[in-house]
Amino acid sequence: MELPLVSVIIPAFNVEKYIRHCIDSVESQSYPLIEIIVVDDGSEDRTPLIIQELQNSHPEIKTHGQSNLGLSEARNQGMKLATGDYVFFMDSDDWIAPETIERLVELARQYDCDMVQGDFYYAYADRLMWDCRGRKKRRDYEILNTGEAIQQLIRNQKIKNFAWGKLWRRQCINGLQFPPGKKFEDSFWTHRAISRCKKVELLYAPLYYYRQRSDSISGKFSADHFDLVLGNLQRYEFIKSHFSECTQEMAYVLWKSLQAFIKNGKAHNANPQMAKAIEKCYQFKQSLRPDFDILLRNRIEYRIQEKTNLLDWAFEIYGRITDRLSARKIKVYLLI
Image (cartoon, helix red, strand yellow):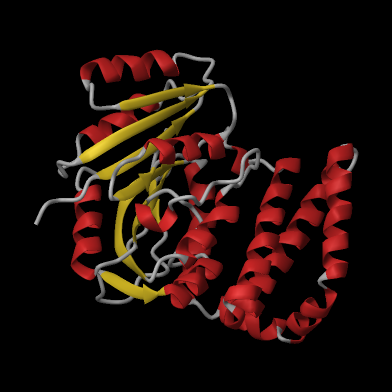
């Protein structure tokens, strides 16, 4: 049987330090049928020159340059250029293991899955961390139907919110655009993509290296985080309409998102944009009060479910210990 083509889409913006490593990791894949699509989103450093240099050495790389329209539009453009049977998104500062695409394609074909997700490492400068909370004992993989996959996405353990690191059947996500102009774009997109997948497979092996950077927008609180609230709000309305059995769990996620933004935003309340966003959060809470009242009656039950996960607790403690010890240049590794 003929092997399927995989389109690897890499949006790039001011990543001169990392883009070569990223593209080289795709070029080094053991899987033979890959088209690499690199979309430069108006970079102001040497990123375009490095991309051009790599394309000169590897003419099969497709490139597209555009003004700085944001990650969503860069991914949307990449999907327009994609011709593969499957799509694999990457961030341009990350990299993948040499066998990544081969293993994901093999599982997708073997079990006729519309999406296959591998695990990933949090890649710090001096250590790698693997969040293996979702892994079942003595199981290398797990297959879920649509409803089960949506529930795991909400819980954000077995299925993470990121679009990257997942092999998507292209016909399942055709026409499904990322929201232009929004930060935290995956919170608007991933649940809709998964809702189109009849079968999802989770491979419990870390294949993707998610680089941790101090200048990442997700690591510093700002008014941009209000887009995460909006994404969760849209996801809540979608879940309520299409997967009603998951409404309460998603309501809990939305509640925590609103509470976190209000709490963190008050420290920046002098910023007019932040003050306006906080007021919007209060309005959302008021308009959703009937649904939240039901949630609050069950809140203790949800907290018990969260805290009884031993691996969750262990990973949290491990992270705290690592943060303290890394300041003293002591490396700690998770072995489970």
